[in-house]
Length: 474
Image 1 (cartoon, one colour):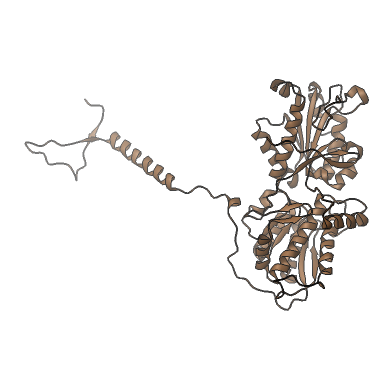
Image 2: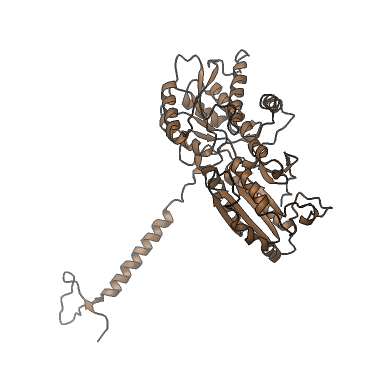
């Protein structure tokens, strides 16, 4: 007997006659044919399906109504950030934003640029809103300000996390938001066509930083095996939003190069001391002759982590790494020479903040970090800003202050071009790109993210950041 059970469809069965034979088809064969047909159809549909859209390759638009503000006597610009000039982290940003507005107001009496004679020349005023808890009271105050004060645009905030809050408000209220310092690339990936970020993104910063780490690793390695067995990569990071977003991009760059950190420790932010938390790594790293230490945290946490690492992880009898900043004609110092640390220490752009340098003091000597502000002293606007800032604040501006000054100036230029109309100001921000700021080029992609990638590396020498030579292009 045939092992297949034969069946016939009653409605289509041929009538048997003397010269006819009933045709039967195995049910398993029918099922197989149906399955093959379904697979073929699926493949054809997949072949016709368009590829996934890359949001950064698209251009977000605003197709809605365009209405002018009327009877204005001034242009109000919202500021979502602290206004305490004595604040060690945010006071410089508030000063830079106010300085940009004061300069713009001093230009009102000058002749109107050609082509803009029909637009009103009005003074600018910053309207600040903030609270100690931006996620609660702060964002509520911001929303009330936006609807009660009717600003033409919004400037802020002082970090990526609070910029996300502001983004939710402008998405509903439909007004331009220009972020000075947010490096979290997801700020402009929410599909909100009103958001613009002036700082380089975390992925651009991480790419340059990790490239530099690997050049340092390879500087003294005799072979690939030596690179892995005698050099440990240790990553200390905090769990606040800013640090997590940067650490995520750093880990991606390590993964692309085929080697992840040998040890990674995530720590809560805001601790007074990290000595006890990193003690567990101390004995582990004794077997490693050389260590590359990477710290991913905010300016204040970076200073405290660095202090703990200097004492717990980077003291020993091993030979310190020869970094690319060492002179080719001089040997690296050893721990026996003068007790110098035996590891190369790297940080993120947070270590380029003035607050970090002030807290870290001598511990910052020799730390490698990305530089987001490379001032051109020949540029009159740059020289004027540095001079006025230094006189007012008692120190040179860092990248956060420079980027805030740039963001305010760019927004003011867009308002002067677009006039009393939020949608026109948004369009002007796109048309002004690329725009030369004192901290670097601001060129927006389709989502409003600055595409700048020319991030340099520096090293702390004598309490100041010195730019390192750029690597030869391969």
